[in-house]
Image (cartoon, rainbow, N blue to C red; front, side, top):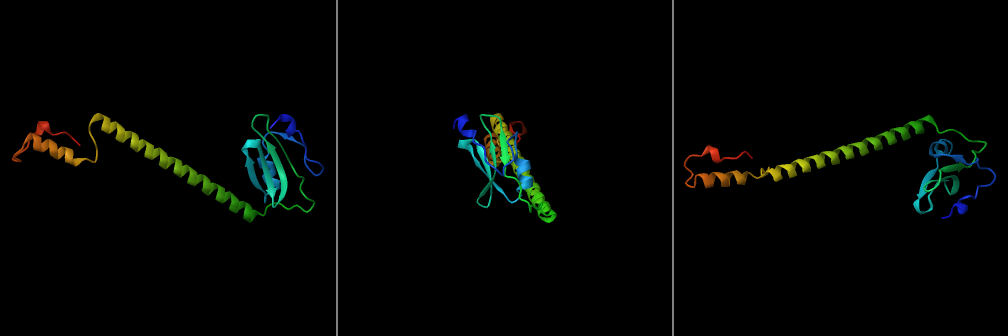
Length: 151
């Protein structure tokens, strides 16, 4: 998409274009709106029902945003719903962080297992110790301590 194609400005009833991301300002005014991102067009749009209420250009040019002006009978989001949304967002962040920590721990465990295998001491293979015992003492009478390797 060419830069000249992005210069179309919404008409009456819209705020002037501003620099930077407008996500917080758009979300505060149009709290019922849902955002859709269009990466091939470098644009995000906020829709309240089927009405376009906010546009944000981003990507290869400086980010700009504008939104439809709030109606005369506009009411802020009730505190009950605002608090519920904040709790939902915090829970989503906690789930994401827990997943990141679990994946990091799994990678750490895999890396330590690879290091153990590289040193020749495979964990979880007790039969290797038995094979060492049988080679050291084929009759099974007594043990030879110098040939035993820790598992």
